[in-house]
Length: 304
Image (cartoon, rainbow, N blue to C red; front, top):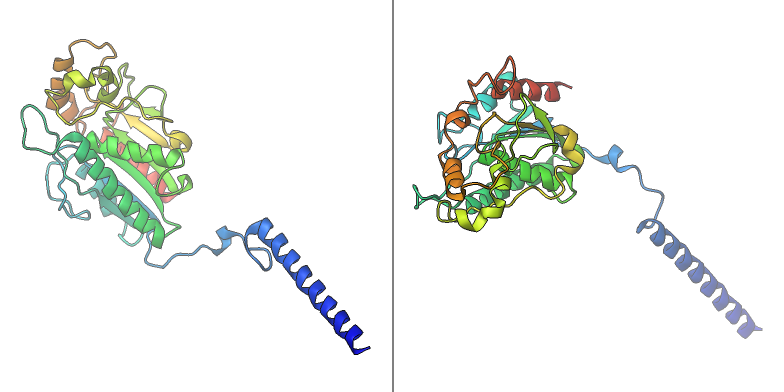
């Protein structure tokens, strides 16, 4: 009789263990965790009180920044065009509410006239890595902070490349955390990608126009790869990304026709004329300037 009871007890234990294992497997297959249903992640996410509501990331153009510049008080180039955007925003909002961060990077462009500078490819990649590190670090500590990206010339290429990655799902923050992107004189601008602001332009970014001539332009701009358009465009950020380009600016409004490769590359290096007067040029956006438009646009996004 004792043996029978022992056998029965053992069977009960086996059944209980088997039932528990089955329940664990069922819960694991459904969600990978044991226990009651999870609370919605959106209701659980919090961040420290010191986190800003919005961070504005500002990317200066070639020769307008340095790797050691102060991102909160940039002085590498007192005439930097992007100061016309960063300073008004810093003056309009307390730093604990809106963080205005200017990209410090080696903003150089090795060319036939400046052989000792960092090549464009290296400069661009350094800028992308530095800005992505800033965004990654902030997102890790402040997951509810939103971002506004803006850049000029080489800085527009950097901000645009980061927006491309975020919009196509390979970026350092989710697309829903981006309130908007404004690119001024983007060297990878193409028609019908993003939202064009201002007077119409018929050309494309220099990196697109010169892509077929990449090898031919290397004597003028060694280490500057003409990569063509961004694959996937701006993806989920397409309706939030704005392109500003002055008519006849060789950086963002280059002719599509191949033409003289060396001459076109030289135009890109010199980048003077209309490219250098966005802060005062009244023919880019009617009734305002490019920097004034971006400041008011950014304020609208911040205040919403």
